[in-house]
Amino acid sequence: MCGIVGLFLKDKSLEPLLGEMLTSMLITMTDRGPDSAGIAIYGSENPGRLKMTVQSDAPEIAFAGLDAELSAMLGGTVLMEVISTHAVLSIPAGSFENVRSALIEIRPNIRIMSRGDTLEIYKEVGLPKDVAARFNVTSMSGTHGIGHTRMATESAITTMGAHPFNTGDDQCLVHNGSLSNHNSLRRKLRREGIHIETENDTEVGAAYLTWQMREGATLGEALESSLDDLDGFFTFLVGTKDGFGVVRDPIACKPAVMAETDQYVAFGSEYRALVNLPGIEEARVWEPEPATVYFWSHNTAPTSTEKAA
Amino acid sequence: MQTVDLQKMGLRGVNAALHAQSDDTNQTVWTIENAKGAHAIACGLDAPIEVTVKGSTGYYCAGMNQQATVNIHGSAGPGTGENIMSGKIIIEGDASQYLGATGHGGLIVVKGNASSRCGISMKGVNIVVQGNIGHMSAFMGQSGNLVVCGDAGDALGDSCYEARFFVRGSVKSLGADCEKKEMREEHLTLLQNLLDEAGIDANPKDFTRYGSARNLYNFDVDNAAAY
Image 1: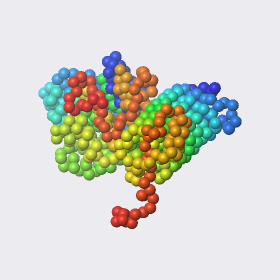
Image 2: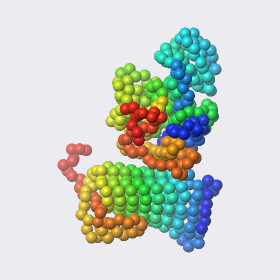
Image 3: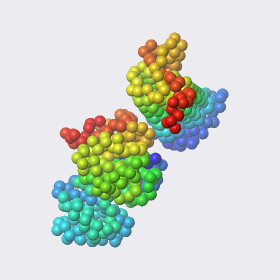
Image 4: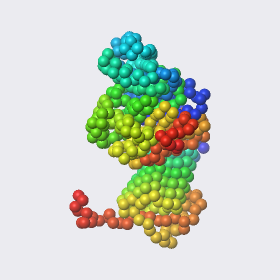
């Protein structure tokens, strides 16, 4: 099964409540998947800086003195905030590849969860309520966010198999469903030089989008072509710096419900996830059409990558 | 009238109270408040009672219904009215996928739209949708009637047997072995009765009938090489 929730805020006064609202929505979806949970939050931006969320199973060892060591290696300031098994690094813009190489050298056991101007991803094995409490997600504010709770089908229950998956700067993907051609596609993408860490099917979906965009496709185009190239069942929710997008496979057996008011656009695998949102009784509630790409964006002048729903 | 709060009484409490009603119960009118999209509300009823659910419902509301009338004042989740045997389900909003799947009898009315696989494997249920229906509706439909006042999605009636489909709007595509059929007097009468029972004002003459071409009933030896 798996449960997905997403919240895109139009009303700025709700931004301090984003983490709290998203956590409550995700906890409602717990019985759709108890294996692992994760949340992507689009928070504040610091000009000239890039955020990296990293993870370690031994955080007290892996993160000790990491900021100072990276600062010395890069010759620039690296700031670090440790939150349980994760740490958010603030690095100089443009230094991501250097930091990635440095981490492989000095802390090979650290995993990179996300990178971007505003994106932070937190994910671990366990129930949504425990994962949210571990990272104090309820206290987080932001413009939009995505949550996922997993019932594992195609690969093992691990932190790296948890969703969301980071697909590029400020981009992430969560998935309800299962891809059946992920093995052949993984081999193809690896030959193309795309880094794929696990045997997880969704990571292949994320890597596919990364590859398409590397080849020049916009995110919208990459999602359109995923309808042809991915075999299996999927409802995808894709986060970008400015908003989020939804696409379902043509069969559309994986559920999806959307609600929109003047204050927000919300996504849930089930209506249950949306029932405590403000003004839900008056919201426009509908199911996204199969094989159709939807986007909502804070960007007032949408680019070709963003198609208004 | 009995009014119960689902959040206070719990799903099992509410369903147990409804299951406790017999054929000659005096408690014939029930209202369920605070549904909040819960699953399996009013499932397995078997008494001549009328239940109104305030708010939207989750999976399988009014599944396996017999005799009872269930009103949903909101939208209905996946599998609503699955395997309905008799009675009536009236949905004021939209219905999600596989509405009335495998239903043997009774009537389901949707005031809004129904999603994909509406009436899949229907075996005698009547379904009347005021709006549109999604793709793969009435797949393997065996018996009963599906009335659509709006449009139908892709692959309507794929591999159907003797179920009848009446569509007022367009059909995006017909499924394998489903074809357009002539509207005879008996069909106009049948459709008028279904519309009347559903409380929908529409002219049967505006509808087109579809049903099985019956080509898949028997094995065609020319296809032997395909197996």
